[in-house]
Amino acid sequence: MELIPDLPEEIGLECLTRLPYTAHRVGARVCRRWRELLKTREFYYQRKQTGNTHKVACLVQSLPVETALDGRKPVGSPAYGITVFDPVSGTWERLDPVPKYPVGLPLFCQLSSSEGKLVVMGGWDPVSWDPVKDIFVYDFTSRGWKQGKDMPSKRSFFAAGELEGRIFIAGGHDESKNAMKSAWAYDVRRDEWDELTQMSEERDECEGVVIGSEFCVVSGYGTESQGRFEGSVESYELGTGQWRRVEGAWEAGRCPRSCVGVDKDGKLVCWAESDTAVRVGACAVGLGERTLMTGSAYQGAPQGFFLVEEVKDGQNDKLERIDVPNSFSGFVQSGCSVEI
Image 1 (cartoon, one colour):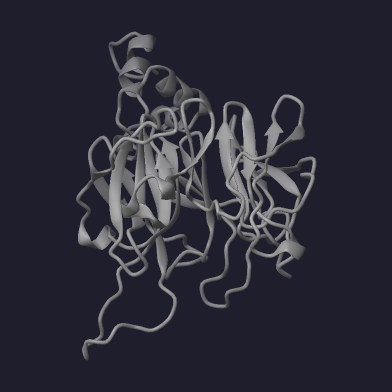
Image 2 (cartoon, one colour):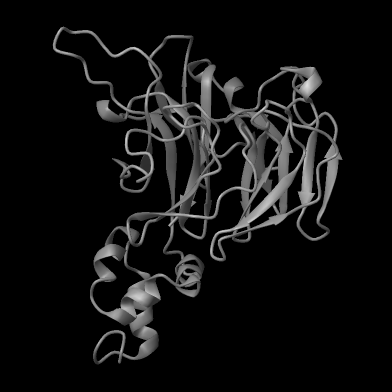
């Protein structure tokens, strides 16, 4: 059966690669062959190689709070959902809740992506606050969630990043709040975890960044040095399978969570220092030549949303404020980009 009647196979494939990702769910219903093709790894990379993919920002964002009839707002921790910002169309949307957690994501869960899919990992149960090992994968083609194989152990505030289709995690702390130095890699398509060589030291509240073919774990602290953030980085080299320690790559004493950037020379920068408008609660998501920035000027100030051009020579261009619908103006806890 031809992909598209009366067209050569290669022309039919070219036409399908040009379908925007928002049309994939409908396209998958046309016929079985289209449905099977749209889900393949080969089709994803064909779209990527021909320039038919683009990056969107996926954010762990607080959900709007409904005011009671007497005008009072509920007391307690806010609930969080996944917000998607598409910089090409300028649209904002909220993904359907993870089926296991219909009223809100696990608190402090981590986001990463692999081959056009969003991966949600770990966090704390939003009701009991117990740490969880859950993995959920969102497929933008089918517009649905599936549950993956649990993380090998419960861990919170760990580093995460994607390299060659695998999600790498390292550090954080266990359910007894002991800092960790273990590391694992999750193969999303195989739905399997592989243990990696351990880092040289424990790193709690660290941040994961991918630079070239290396997964970098930025800063963090050990169990006995609670809150005293390291200035060093440990970098996992994919080719050797070993960790390399880099001293002085980060400002000692500064928390790296959600605010680590990389300039054009591959050096780490802190987005919270880029502008006074995002000094508090800064979160940055790279979108290619631009970065989505969120944060506040001071504690209690309204959340701001900005786009900034690529980091150059350690300096950032001026932040460009963007308009955001009221329902998407809540606090952003963390985020990642997904190329779809």
